[in-house]
Image 1: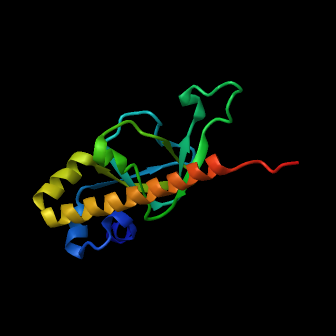
Image 2: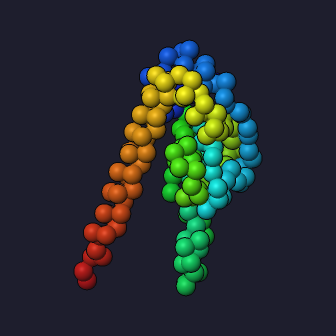
Length: 162
């Protein structure tokens, strides 16, 4: 389990002892292809680390009321593999999920980390907590910058003139 945690960006630069402490709050689960890890627009308080397989992060335009004409259904916006993390926003705000997560391979295995368990661990070891929260902030900043570039690209894109 420790080798998978070491691959995850949010556990970057943690010592072996710190990774062992994080491993104690992880719960392994698996899911078959097509299985839903969580739905868009639902309450959240867990983060996930992919151990094996592929997870697709999907958004459904219908949730926004976009149904005229009928949308294509859920669209995959990210594909995650071993060592990648998803659901980390739940650790920050406990808000609603901004996307759904669906298992794409059979079986897909991941580690689940509950928000309360991670916060407790961070409060017990401030150095560990600082490093993890700094890494979460960096990971979220990276995702925000990527989303910003995508929005800019779509706003600036113009069809070729004929």
